[in-house]
Image (cartoon, rainbow, N blue to C red; front, side, top):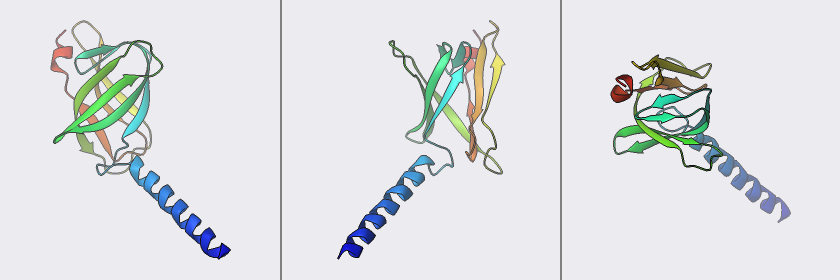
Length: 132
């Protein structure tokens, strides 16, 4: 009887660990939640985010991929949502990277992000931010 209980507990534990590990990466080969730190102000979509640490959540709005940037440990709610295109990588990313361009006001505009271990990179279009 004791062995049966122990096996049942072990089976539940294995299922929970398996479910958690599957939940970390979605069907697109990217993690649903990451953290990023900006060392200066950055345009993300149509929002100029101040420097700081942000939780970055990959979500879906119908068929559209949306990245939501939410400032961590802030009294004022700071959030930016931007549509993205997922571009498959040939192999999982070996490091996290961010690519920027500058707008006419010489401000940074986030154009691409890839996170270590993901199988796709996020590409952003921010036309309004580029023309400021």
